[in-house]
Every structure is written in C-alpha cells, then in structure tokens.
Length: 268
Image (cartoon, rainbow, N blue to C red; front, side):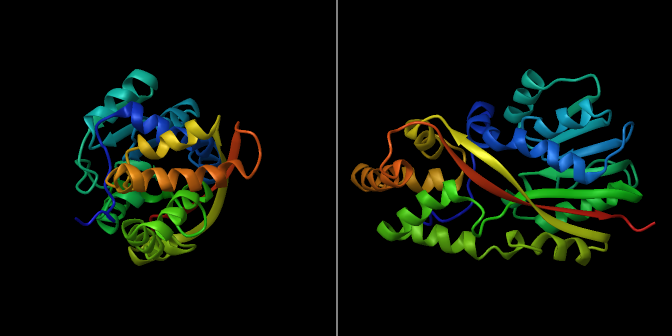
C-alpha cells in the first residue's frame, strides 16, 4: 500500500478545526494586511474550508463568496462563521462557475498545498478576477517551516519506511519552498508578484493535545501513522513525547509555523 500520498478527510469540519484551526485564525489577519483587499471589494475565497478567511474578509468590509468542494466543511462554515456579507457555496475550484472578471480579488489560504491541480486552480482564480485585481494565496512551507509536524515525521522516518517516503514526498514539493508559488504566479501571467514568509504560533495545551492532532487529523500524516501497527505507532509516540517534553513537565508548548504568502495582480 502506498501511504505517502496527500490524503485528507474532507467531510468532518470538527476534525478540520482541531487540525487547521490552531493556526488558520492567526494567519488570517497578517494575510489580509498584505493582500490589500479594500472595503466593498467583491472577493472569492477559493477552497474556503470552514470559513476562517471568509469571515475575516467580511468583517473587514468585503463581500465574499466562499467556495469549497466539501459539504461538511461548508456546513461547519455556515454554523461557525456566518455573516451578512458571506455566501458559502459548493463548487469545483478547478472549474469555477463564475464569468471572467467577476471579482476584485481571488484568495486562498491553506488549500493549494492539498489540491493536485494547483496550476489549473490558480488559472481559474486569475480568470475570474478583474484586470488590476488581486490573486493571493498562503500555504505551509513544507521544507523546514513546520516544526510541530517535523518532530513526528522525522521521528517516524527513522523508524518506518512509510514515514520516510512521506518525508521525501513533502520535501520534494518545490512549489511550497520559498518562491515556489511566485514562480507559478508569474508563469500564468500575473504581474507585480511578491512572496513573503508569515510566521504564526501553533499552540498545544499538553502532549495529549499535540498527539491527538496526528492521530485524529484529516491529513496524510495521520493516515500514515494510523496505518502502522500498534507497536510501531507506540514506538513513534514514545520518541515524539520525549521530543515534546525535552525533559520538562508536560504542559503547554508553542511551535512556530511558517507560511509562504504570494500576491500578484491580473494585468490591466
């Protein structure tokens, strides 16, 4: 069985919140300050998930349509983050239903790194954005930007070949290295392209809280971990616990998380 694939649980919004919510709320504010979306702008939030960015945009005065392929996530968005300025809808972000030049901006956070057809999605974001409008995204920096995940993945890679394969796959995704998104933005014809790092804190109340994000999460780290035998998983947990505690009592820990944000304009 090939376990080193990007595989996600697209159905459960509560799992998504536990896994992604720790940092998505912190990311929204610095992302918006750099995206330069104006009050009154019509904005498309691509792969909006449970609506963190959509809600932040709406509270800043934008009129937002949030599109996602997961009905479960959209239900969670409507339940947690409804707003008069937001319309959430189900759709395929690889082939958006909107006419060309429909939006002042198209944005996405924590999504393009889990969609295989990235170039197709970004091309659609460009198509539906008016000339002079903003196309922006933020994704996790897989290489060296995720210490909380690296502790588990690097430990697993020493002990299990499936984790070694997962680590190699992640490290090889050069789109999520510095300037990877910027290169794509220029390739599809966006201009005035800039890419910057954004660092936020990822906080855990205890080792149990930390470990649960990997045993109960929606992503490929969880699918790889949970496919192991109980003994193999227990061995990884023992070593990861030691790395989390670093000889100190159990309790809260904070890990930096680095994202790469890219912003470009549709040619006028």
